Length: 160
Image (cartoon, rainbow, N blue to C red; front, top):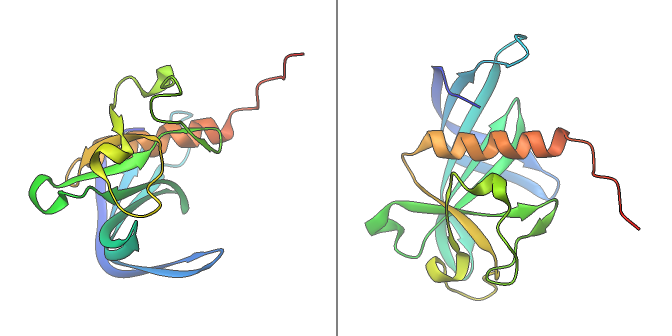
């Protein structure tokens, strides 16, 4: 998925999750063409400054495509210095386990690290994670677009 136009910027975007409302202090809306030559997609990137995650307040970024959240990022331990955020690599709905699992080929274009190498704190998952700079919206949107494709793809037939 490719960003083509900046549509809007704003503040105080509230999103209703199944467990409650989360407010994003800032958001940026982009437009992306539909490869099927239909109506362009609206991509929203929301920024939440201080969300409690893994024992500390971290920046949280969510990427929505046409109103559906496809990618979530959280600030690395050194975010204030590096500006880097991470998103857990998924295989279906399961985390891709750091060291134990092979990183799926579709993630080759991304920078991938072990989540625990960049994020510490109680409950940190043992998973591979995509790394992006907070300003790298192209990478964030590319990950969301990949996850959108994965969600829309039919499940692979099971093998006996």
